Length: 408
Ligand SMILES: *Cc1c(COP(=O)(O)O)cnc(C)c1O
Image (tube, rainbow, N blue to C red; front, top):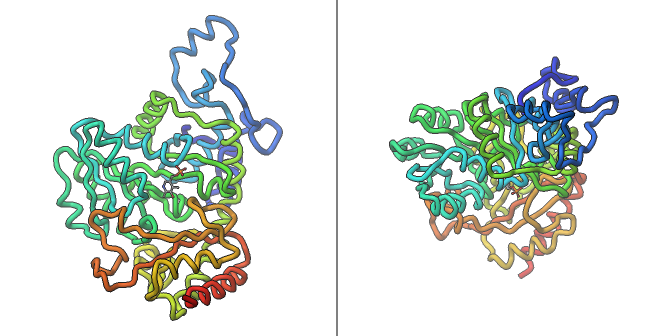
């Protein structure tokens, strides 16, 4: 949906925009939230109106259910307003569908796609699987190695998929520089911005061409919804929208309403989660059982300087590595936690813990990040997604689980 006036459009501070974004009077009527418009058929006044409408394919025009209704339009409009520099946002039925929708807009047979080696694993396998089947060549790069990255480009390089911090291993990279090089080489840069969201990293303002998110995570915020989005400037937005229509991507109005509800507390939740995560990261960094905390928000942790330079926020998701011990010890720690669920996804109000082994999902980057693939370096990691519980309770839970880690 193309950017429009909202009730709070005049105010530029983020928390205020999060409250007002997408709430256009013609969609909400006299109530606060846009109603849930459940619709496949859109009815026309007469055959003349039908004939007229057939000529248009514009945002905010009733046509047929697949092009959405005010519930979905309000969500797209809100996400556009939260991403400075965006002309519009397309929504998809999942984060993975957003990644597929974006890549299928950008590449065609014979093209080369560059994917950051520490990207979300389904993004990697989209390159090595689906897109390879369609005649696209994928190359992986270490986003911290700017020279190696620049050297990978060729005449056929059409797009670059970035993600920061890296999936599970949380490395930071110089996003503005990577985006600048992509543009100079004639390629489109795409950022999976699920971790920071536009509230923590204004991707387009930093030179990224397309910013995508798994709305499943923070925007939904309550672990009851699957959805994705992609925001871009006018030309790329038009291309994304066209491809999404061709692929038949739709989001139900009920889910769009849930995403809008989640969005209203996004700034508050991210702030609290980040604050709690930082407390817990500090606690872990002091513990003798922990070799390294991988949390770019933590001063002294890998990537902290780049994070401080480019990001204005973060979230509750980070990882750490045990000092010594076995995979079984690590798993015993996770099983001993009582306030953390074990599961994929994150960005909900509840805390989660996940044993991690990123090695199988890397082609060029070492695990752990600074190990140089030295097998003697400790490598049993856990990813924590910190929710809205009291951080002191979470710390006490982690402390008792560390005792279980020691009890072989
Ligand atoms: C979860 C996630 C996705 C995929 O989102 P789904 O809605 O689960 O398909 C993509 N990127 C990142 C960084 C994620 O964490």
